[in-house]
Image (tube, rainbow, N blue to C red):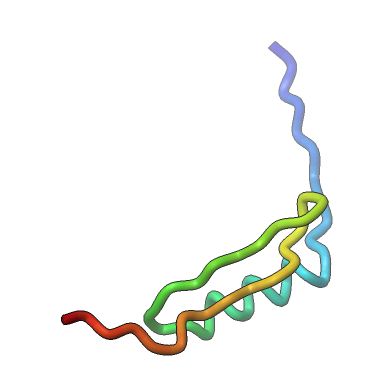
Length: 50
């Protein structure tokens, strides 16, 4: 069976997403994807558990 390896370039938006994830020590992050690319990243600012 042939080995089909395809390299894909990382886009600027993907690099920004990785940077955000690496700089987040704790919390929830929601990522909205459009056209197979991260479009919006939302970090939960405040959460209160009762």
